[in-house]
Length: 299
Ligand SMILES: [Mn+2]
Image (tube, rainbow, N blue to C red):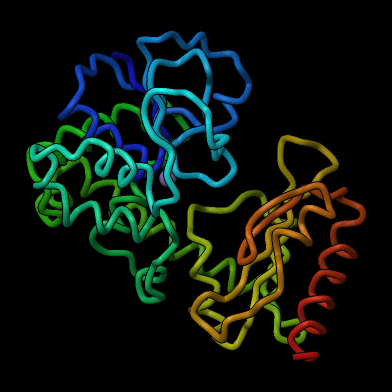
């Protein structure tokens, strides 16, 4: 069978588990949009994991709410409301060969469902550090080779310290730390508080080194939420707006997903985003921050 899986830690871990229980002779790493484009000629010899469904495939495993199948939908594999797609596979397989992955899987669950401790956001270690090494080269082929390397390491050894001390992993891990340092500096320089919301206006930046969405709350712990305007990208004239609750602070009940859908975007209650016209970006950002501040005041 050929496997199509996501590029992140959950996708990689799906590949680890499936390699134990199925005959996998090729692994491809893709993102959800590539599945949805319909351009991949899936066949019944293909397994799709941690990605949207394509009816041509032979087997499918996922956990994303957005691809939840109809109650009577017929397909091989499993969809379940679980913290990771790897967990869906593990529970579906009920295979004693997978038991050695039980504690690693708990880490994958935490990371894929966004439960990253604040100190990890600033100084990643262990599994979160590994997850950060998986998507960092401008050359996708290089990332793909690295992901295959990590899969073979994890199949041999589930001890994260051993995996991180592998030479290839260690090089990337050091780079993650460097880039995060620069990312933190840029976020600090380009963020100001608007009421109780941390507003990062990154439109003028050439680009952004790799970082994570949690780090802002270690820099601005008083923020109840964050709003970010990303550097202008390929899509000319549009700017990406991202909004999130400070998951480490006081729980906010403001529905980010609903607000983003009004702008043509999407998301969940706690986090979401939309592409907005560049000339309106600041106005839209200000309006959403006003809404969040007002919402919290009224309660
Ligand atoms: Mn996932």
